[in-house]
Image (cartoon, rainbow, N blue to C red):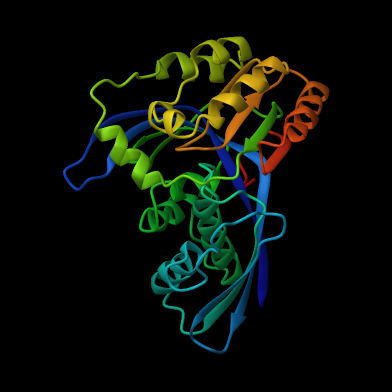
Length: 297
């Protein structure tokens, strides 16, 4: 085998709380993570050249500043990490086609890195287990272990302690991102400076997700980082309100933002809301999709 292709799926947070901070600066979290059907395409080729090279096709993704295609790109880092583990002597060429919005709180970079780990594992017929890939993934970033497997999971610790939850597949999801991007590091830094933090009821969120209770989820879902991002980017609130007005049972920012998602009962309602929000002109990306399960099956 000389080449492989992988899908790198985006995620949304159905609930996100920050529960503390370690001495090394990493924040402790409690998050319900959910894979959705928006994805990047990752193609990996073996090369005789021992180096790792990367080419990025931005497709329809709008960027104020292009992503780095150098050694600091998470895909390149993932290739190095697994190459060292497998003692690979040759190199790789990685072609990345972006569809997941960048700096959007949707784990696009983390998912791309996870796809590289899965892809090279297949390409080299290495036989590393999901758990072994997740151990390597933690060297790259806190969201990467989750992205190895995807689906519906509770993520704790710094994101590496993963617990599978009941299936939450085929739920219509509308995703909308305004033109601006958000720095995750800056949002967490600003959160640390807040005198009062409103924590979501993560136990109630988990119960609603596991029972696929859309109304219960709408009543309990929360994202602690909205306390930081919303005042700086009021458009987040505008998008959320529009989704609710257009029939969403619940709407919230994902990750550190500024992307907002809405949960809908039917595909028709989701598509109709997408057309309305797209017509508002305040978003650069509007996509109707659905939740999906374990991406490794």
